[in-house]
Length: 253
Image (cartoon, rainbow, N blue to C red; front, side):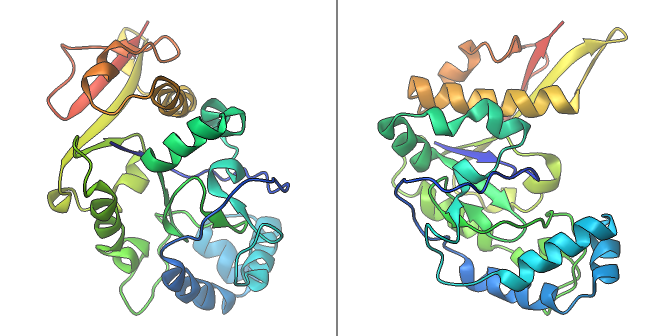
């Protein structure tokens, strides 16, 4: 089983003493960095729809990007991201065995790094997958990454008896996959709650639930789909009537 998560804008880059690995698509990341370094502060602000202050901060990050990644200049992605999803995942509280399990199963989709394992070192950045950054490969990051992310997912699925990808990423990041080329089952999870007599996705709560489900899978050592039906995810429960074979809906009142 693989679990797909979106990254987070909020980061905690304080150093940690843990084992780490290198991102596997760094050559592609370097190409993006070269393109982004050529942007002015104003151009970057317009491209990313951010303030001048954030543009200045991120332009500096791109300029300071340097290889090789070490524990002195980078941090494992599973511990560096600290948004709503990752506060619920709370990988910093995993035992070494739990972190090892998470590292086998969790994959983080990234506009800059493509696909990260929790142990993969990363430097601070902000680059959303939906950014319309033109490159030689096309008009945006979806074109830039092409089939590279999907190929890496398939490589990670090789030898996995379940052949299952549990998609807990947002729609923006899920679009970086090519579903028809996934060599296994792609199961997308949705979290909805009753508001105004209708079930709706409440973004903040759904983000937290995605992180909590990834945490529960890790703590309980789940490796196939069926046990997911029994999970209580922050009060969200599997709703058989609203679910289909590859789109499972969890609801709460």
